[in-house]
Length: 62
Image 1 (cartoon, one colour):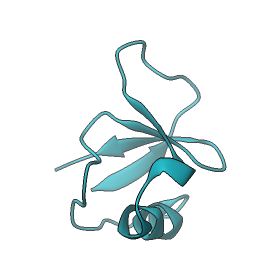
Image 2 (cartoon, one colour):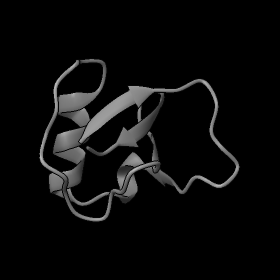
Image 3 (spheres, helix red, strand yellow):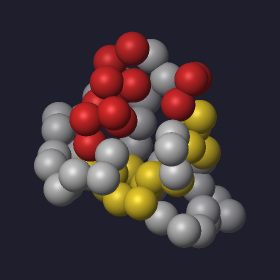
């Protein structure tokens, strides 16, 4: 899984707010925001979801 900063949120995307995520998911978001790293998929985040953190980040799964 990767996070990619996005300036627009697709109308059909599920938007998750950072504080709604469990501890493991929050850790992955903090780790991946603004860095070109990948992490194993975790919890309830799926390809195409958008996470509102310090900006909007789209989840990309491989």
